[in-house]
Length: 313
Ligand SMILES: NC(=O)c1ccc[n+]([C@@H]2O[C@H](COP(=O)([O-])OP(=O)(O)OC[C@H]3O[C@@H](n4cnc5c(N)ncnc54)[C@H](OP(=O)(O)O)[C@@H]3O)[C@@H](O)[C@H]2O)c1
Image 1 (cartoon, rainbow, N blue to C red):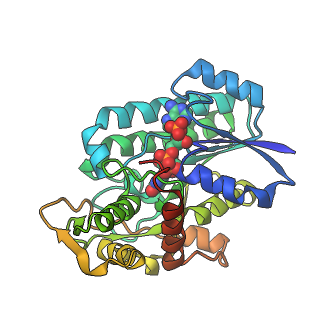
Image 2 (cartoon, protein in one colour):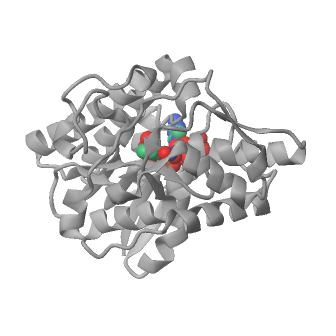
């Protein structure tokens, strides 16, 4: 039996790994780490934890993560926390000689001005969007850091680049959350108070969204079957890109609150589009079946309704 440490084990993606881990129970012992178990900002604590757990694999998800508002209000924390967590985790994974480490980047760190669709090779071709530059540069350094360990010491540190993720156990805080959990929470509150469901921005930006359990399955595929060290984008197909307006209307429909939706065009839209190509993944895994957006949203809202108010918010 091999041990996998999942950093960020209580987060959106870590919880999805927990959800699907029963399919791998004969092969792996999963250890989920959060900030209470081990503060990854502290090198000594991290090293002690890694020495104690003796992991064969690390799925490194822990990060200081947030939506547009958090990125614009707290750029120093987004840069420093993420740099520090990543340095500590990579150094310790190297120290205890793990077989493989999966490090998590994000499609929002690609250059702002780039031709579409975006491929893995485009990551460092230009500055990221100004709104999340600190987070983006910390994540870009993570890729350089993994490549450095691979080339200097022969480690097996692989970067994955997921697109926007949604699902149960997300952060639904109205200030800090990503667009889908924020809209779900907003729509719930609007319905409770018989007020308008106001969506920030025009609704026109395009986004690709991946359901958290699909990503968890793809991460296990990178552990088990992806035998390269080069960075790989993990995203649904380009044809499944949707507008924020489509997302908002879908959520409103699930809450039976469609006629109360309104778009506040005085608010910022963020980057208009950041369409990525999953060609590399599709070439290696042509039959992977993604959860439809409709099913994913239904499952997420049903989880939200069951758990509310005991959710991260
Ligand atoms: N969410 C998205 O749409 C998205 C899109 C692309 C890429 N990603 C990437 O995917 C990964 C997972 O994201 P997520 O949405 O699952 O994140 P999340 O829900 O915000 O969870 C973050 C996790 O990191 C842990 N963590 C934060 N600081 C820590 C510290 N100092 N020490 C130990 N643990 C710490 C948290 O533990 P506590 O609960 O104890 O704080 C939590 O388990 C991240 O690397 C993120 O950059 C996310």
